[in-house]
Image 1 (cartoon, rainbow, N blue to C red):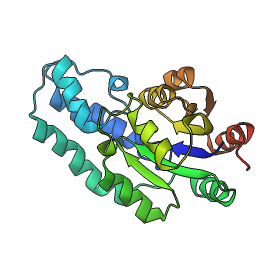
Image 2 (tube, helix red, strand yellow; image 1 turned 90 degrees about the vertical axis):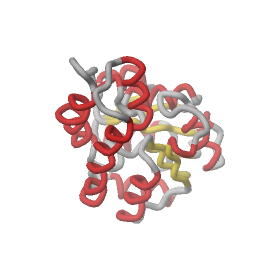
Image 3 (cartoon, helix red, strand yellow; image 1 turned 90 degrees about the horizontal axis):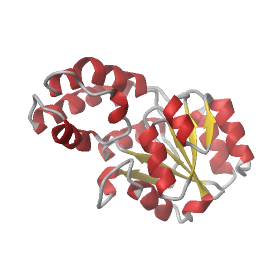
Image 4 (cartoon, rainbow, N blue to C red; image 1 turned 45 degrees about the vertical axis):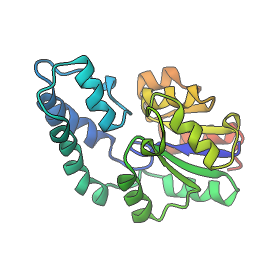
Length: 212
């Protein structure tokens, strides 16, 4: 294994429950006329592409700019207060010490990812947002293909750590081995391996050849 590619929300920072609650209680009811979609339909997708998905498949009740504002206003404070998930800083330090290349691969915009990297002084080789990709975001493979290229690794020599089904799909389609993190049933079923907590993730990475 040459590189580990981490999703951000729900894998590096403890924001996934916040976003799921905000989408369930505020964003989707405001955005869709009638019964809103199941959250898993949009989980892991860039919020700008989420609007396009909703407009194509549902009757929307908000304009695009109003919809984006719901996400951007929530994110303004969230990434200044969110915590690292337990054990991530130690895991990252151990991987770096052993020469494993690291990338963050997220559907979030660069401003949000960069805020997390700066706040926690995360030592990574590449930060890749769907904003960097000339094509669709997750579940399409493009963002993971770009990440592997940026860390100088063959996709077959990378491992992706994802908590959403769409993230697992994206990495798999890029030819990258996947670990579903956090226990989502669909992501777990789709992934090559699964880990529910930091110690389990460390154990899986060791089994896959990371020099832990």
